[in-house]
Image 1 (cartoon, rainbow, N blue to C red):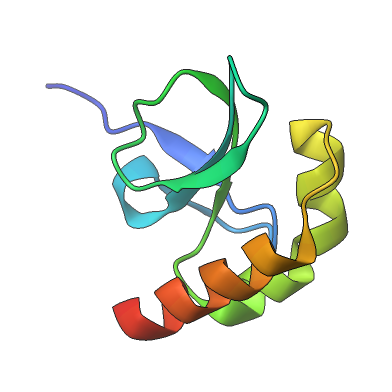
Image 2 (tube, rainbow, N blue to C red):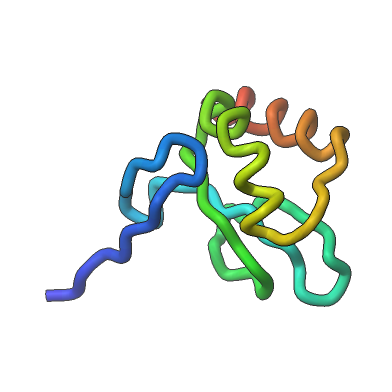
Length: 86
């Protein structure tokens, strides 16, 4: 039997199946941070639950985990995307 990988949400700290979470990735070439719904983009990644509450809780930790400063307009864009997804 194949096991399903688990990841920990940076916001709430809960362990969930990888396919239940959204990956944020700092792209290897440009250093831009983006939502990676496929989970396959190259770069340094971190996982969050697909809701705005976890995104807000994870703000400081995400910047530390991804080792970069994330612009405020990116946070707003992700909030809108997550609200549309719910």
